[in-house]
Image 1 (cartoon, rainbow, N blue to C red):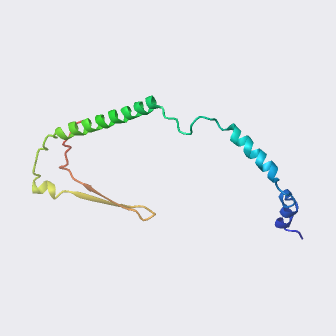
Image 2 (cartoon, one colour):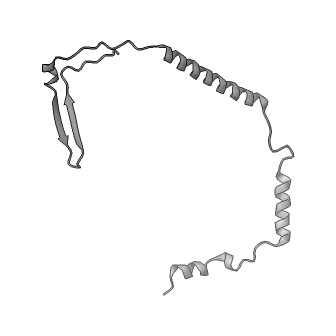
Length: 118
């Protein structure tokens, strides 16, 4: 019984191929080198480079300005209200567990109030 490795070796055309001759390799190299353009490998386009640098500098300036303005804005202090002891004692916890074993615990606070407006 012939296995796949033997079949692949029998059908491989490269086992009997002698490869390229030195003359063929030289001719191929000359053709490739003749197709290379004569201009330098690195072409500097100053206008494009300057435009990209200006865009990056502009974005950095806008980011810095935004950060400074955000630092100046102080949020209004939240009103401090103390919950009576009776309300604080009525907090309720709800325990829930999933079949996979995840446990969820919710604490329900009736005195909870949002301090920000949208």
